[in-house]
Image (cartoon, rainbow, N blue to C red):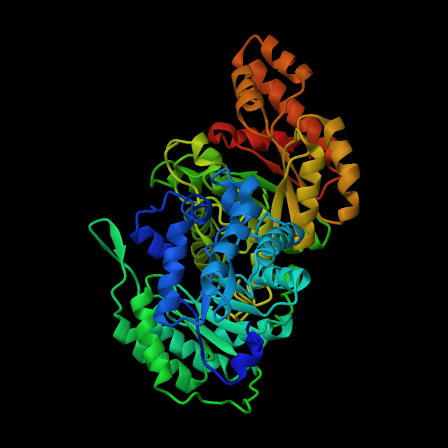
Length: 610
């Protein structure tokens, strides 16, 4: 039996972890559409063979084949019920090969879903998912828990806390970085090292995504801000596609050279990630063995700058629209849908008419019902420049990943657009191109958090952006949702995340709205009511049956159905909209009136009620 603990051994030795498991399985016929973790049950001897090759190559630690064995990732393969068995078996397989001379690290990767504050999975759900996986690994006999390839500090915090709660085993906490040495959220190496140290990680490191050289730069920074052991597990370079297969081209000799450099700058744990093989580990073992390990008796305490954020710009200074709401004035906005093509002359003409009538802002939807139209940002900028009227720009989570969203938000603010309505967005299946893909990296709640941070001068990675953005940002809410309790819960989350106003779906039934308003009155957030002047029975029927979130009372549907002419039906729709406007005038902070079929006189006729 081993008489020394892993952390004690680490004090006077450089520890070599093994290399890749996933790419090794892939190279031996387990294709990417299969669940790699299930191989523990279906082909345990294959996993054993790979572990044995790493031990024979000189690895001090082998990692279990359980990187993706959490309930969210296993759920995609219908394997949640096998979660405990897959993890425990993975640990037992490695334990059998490791014996008493080699340590076993239980591999735990990200959940594969976004967690709050930018995703729908709660912190508690994330913690529970990590807990059940780690418990199974501990029951299987692992010596160490390794959290690897994380890019979100919020998520790795939950994994780390779960690991500490389940057992008193050493925990390796590793983030994945890009070629600039930052996480995919843009968090710098010094910052996440300090945070992981504070959270109680026993070993702090980086792994995956990039090759040896960028990781050398990262650990040179990391060793300056912690006295915890630092680990590094690079890929064998960036893969290249050769005849449909991803091939890693970094040689074992090159990896060995960088293993020496890692030791010389102070790394205590070294290994390999994607693309590394037993041949790479063998050469790295030789390189480490040839050096006298550098003992670090002290460290230079360099406090990385922690960006707590700046004070947001006062609301009344962000836009005219924001100032009016702050002053308690009743605001009026008109919705204008972007054109299908590039000609915006009609939209400019309508905007000028609306400005002449004293409209406060123009609401511009972003791909409503996932239809192909001019980008809302471009129309907003055109109307600002040519008409001088403020837009309220709808921004959805559908079309871009987090990096694209961040780029957009910085650019939108730079061109002077200040008012945002943040919505999740309609799925492509509803629109012109049902085969188009959607991204949905975050939903509206996550996006509210991002914009709130930007208003404090901080990006999603916690990095300063120079100065605060000046967004006045709101969210959508549906008073007539089928599941009103769920809708109210999400609305509460949006408000807690920082939303500054809300615009409702079109209101057709006052009783429904009053019921909703009573429940949200305590949220202390300005409410702008949506109003839609119906133009025909056909129009009403379409909205009632085919537009999610809209419900028109039977009495209105019946009145529209009985209309004898188009003019009579339109007048009924206008009169109903006027009635809603008059009834809500002293209750809400403003209205958003739709412009059916682009007819600018329809909303203007409704406004006669004021």
